[in-house]
Image (tube, rainbow, N blue to C red):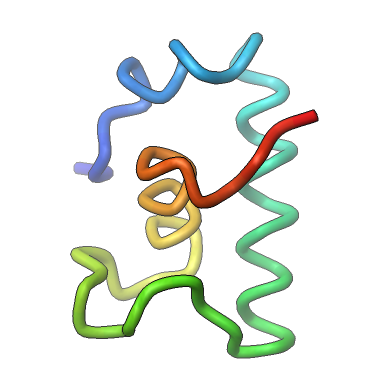
Length: 64
C-alpha cells in the first residue's frame, strides 16, 4: 500500500490527473539528480514515487 494515502493528498491538489503529473515529474527529477528535500533516513518509502508523495504531503512541493 502506498504511504501517504492518496485521498489525504487530494485535498491539496485539484484532481488525480494533476497529482499524477506533479508526482511523476518530481520522481523523475529525484532519479536524475539524486536530490532529496529530506534526509534519506526520514523517508518511509524506498522508491522515488513514494518519496515524492511524502514530500507533497509534508508541503515541501509547492503547486502553482
